[in-house]
Amino acid sequence: MDKGTRGGDENTGTTTVGKRVTFFHIPAELWRHTLSFVGFRTSVLVMRQLNHFFHFLVTGYHQVGLVGPNHKPEGEVNTDGWCLQGRAWLKDLEPIPSFAFYTILRTVSALPDDYWPHVKDTQIHTIENPQPETKIEYITNTLRDSKISSLLIHTNSFSQYSFWTKESLELLVQALPDSYVKKICLFGGDSCCEALSKVLASTQIKHLILDPETTDVGARLIAPSLNQSQITHLDLSVASKITSSGANAIIKGLENSRVTDLNLGDKACNS
Image (tube, rainbow, N blue to C red):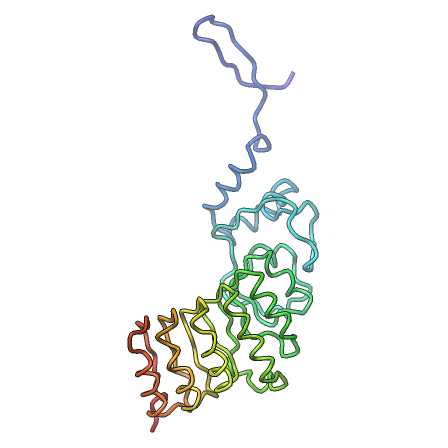
């Protein structure tokens, strides 16, 4: 007979023998709720190594060591508060552990081509600097199908994307109204401003960063669309080619807009 705990009935005075309760009997939902309160790096990642029960509880996988995008979690995983801080440069991590890709990554750079179609099933919310050879179609489809809220193509990599044509940039911008993107920085300078000005009013973008290639021409192109948009933060701090002429056009375009934070930087108003 299993060891157990004795209980009784106050009315009859009888006793019962209950089965021994272990952590295996505790509902998985309660475990997941409990784990959401403990340290991710210090506790959760350690607990998954205890045994297969905790490995499945934490990762959602019965099998250990799965890598790549073709292995979605088999079970429900509570990801509240579970994330790796900072940017993950995925080109250097490939093959990427499936658990990390689907559950704990939030900001990624240099996403390999075969991972793009699966972003919609992850917790990733920010994409920075796609690999230069990445096809525009991968990015546009991901923006439409996922909940990516930030797309940041930093212009320190501008020359790497020189093979992307103006038509490619327009395709990327045209995907924005059907996306959840709220923060954006795109290379492309004046061409980007021209493309954005046509769709800005139909997007959810609240934070716009103009890149260093943007000149007064681009500033004047995008200025009239600012008061029709949802933008609250406008950053010109790295747009060093914008002079006082372009800055004045931007400021004029802010009349009756929602912008509450304008960052001109040290060089944005050079005359």
